[in-house]
Length: 272
Image (cartoon, rainbow, N blue to C red; front, top):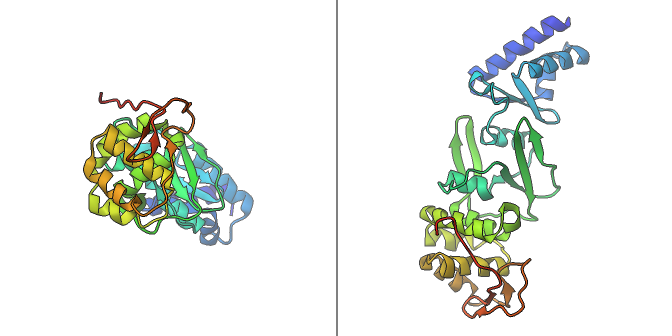
């Protein structure tokens, strides 16, 4: 089979996938589809489709199809292919932090990067055609608090509003610090419920992160109904003094006696 015919076959196959509602495929899938093709001809066809901005490789052996409405961007929004990518990788995941917060309506500042939680082994960040996907490793993904959200191409796993709130505090250094976290939390609490927060606390989290979250909800945002849930959860735990900011100087800072949080930084939200 010559290169031109190979290209035409592959282009038609990509169009067929699109008509079936699929926007991704794997290299192995294509090899099986055209099992009589040479590897050289297949790579030629893939490269030609890539140069025409009809497909893009976002991981070795995995391609995303670019429909006409996304041609100018040369890439799909990550929400439209993340689930397919992780099915290809055969790994669990969930979209979290700023990405999940935006999907829950807390999009005061639209995130420029996507955040995906995975377990070990780690993955390198995906950087392609103006998008960046950061992979955040957890030793154990939570059993409670991961939701399925419908997209144009199927479903994706995202953290619930309650799990997102805890992750934002625990990974504050990944999203711009506690003041930015507090700004997002103020909007995120509109999608939260005390009952669901209590359920999510069945997962394992660091005590210090829960102290900081409780402090923010109670003292910075006046969201006492959520702060009370965390306070009750910590009631039978060993709680030690922790600085609100792990990077700021804590010398001379007062300690909030309810949360045992050293107030060594000032929280300022964008809504003040």
